Amino acid sequence: MIYFELFLAFFIPNIIGYGGGPAIIPLIEAEVVGRYGWMSGQEFAEVLGLGNALPSPIATKMAGYVGYEVAGVGGAAAALFATVVPTMLLMLGALGLLYRYRDSPQVKRMSQWVRPVIAMMMAGLVVSFFSTSLATAGLPHTLLIAAAAAIALLCFRVHPAFVVAGSLIYGGLVLG
Image (cartoon, rainbow, N blue to C red; front, side, top):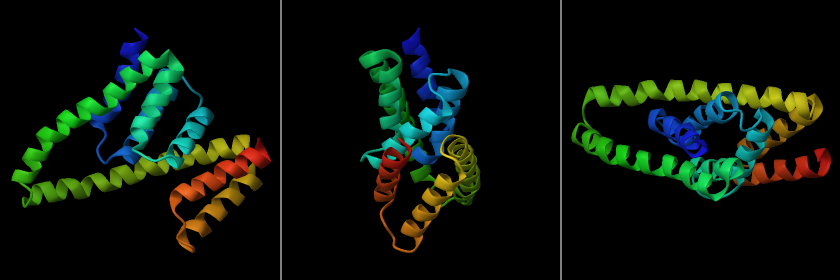
């Protein structure tokens, strides 16, 4: 039963999520933290931070880690299968349709409507992580990490992986 639950927890976000990894992270969080309670919000944030620091798509890393933590190797396989195979099959079908009608105004409008929805979902995730950070690390550390990350990203154009790695190191040394 746990394998089926893991499958559903990653299948549903990957089927209804449009826009890649960043768009489905809030949906995965809703399943893993909210619906099944396999992790706390803090644990999910830590896994997401670690996953962002590593190469490859975030959804597969999250699926593999959560699946392994919940049910070992079989759980990781079920979660990875749910993440990769349905998306691949849907994309092959959808790609044919979108390519056929790529110049259609309706297809172009559909893509433009999806962007604000993804932005709001990501904003909700940021607010959730910010409040979790405030509760666990406190206001000074949260603001310091946020300010340092913003300066590194916007002013110095540091690659996001290095910003995440630096935040992890700071958290490990100062807060750990």
